[in-house]
Image (cartoon, rainbow, N blue to C red; front, top):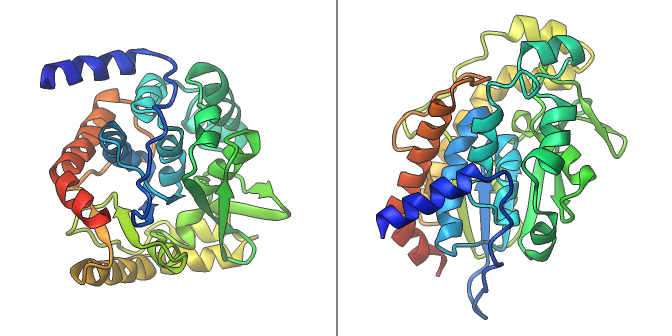
Length: 311
């Protein structure tokens, strides 16, 4: 059975398009479930590993909220495309059209708007908008209003060009990306305002809350050593500068609050069982697969406990 699953996964990763799985049925009267997907750049391969295992085992949610990489890779949880996030990242991570210094020097965006958020989802590894629309799961992304510093929570339900722009906004790294203009706002990385939006998800009234982190239990965020440069690069956005200067304090408090909620059984947390550190731009597909496999392993290890929690 295991070798058959390995062959099926290999075949999936060799394709350039996989339609979404059938939308799972939810039993009448079952608890509602909200899932929170932390960001973290290419550490999001961990989240992709977790959600791929969930999809393979028919685990779904009433709602999901993604921040940054939790949005870019987590949208495949709603479109039910197992393997897609790993596949296209392995295929294009070394491609200068996808991400890198060249893109930044030409466009002021580390990740290419035209390639990573343009050609890729519509031509090169097609995003299944039909399944995304058919799946009743609510999918929300978090961005930060660069002018006010407020977190902006926006629901995506079509999977089209505008939704991809919201995902791009959620993942636009301050100083390494131009603000994305949507609905009269200038938007940047959602992690600046709300790195782990479990409090927002709890406020939505769902019966259960599941959080996928991309840092291990021992991790603590340190002050950003690049703040002098960020203050210059973001001088037009003082509210964003203030958020970034204090982000480590707010992030560590969120982690402490989350641990207490986990201890009392209010939330269920899946976190890396080992550190999954990666640079901002990864050129080696094997590094991505390593992190993805940690996510798969942790998802499989916690699957029975998760099912008991959400039942």
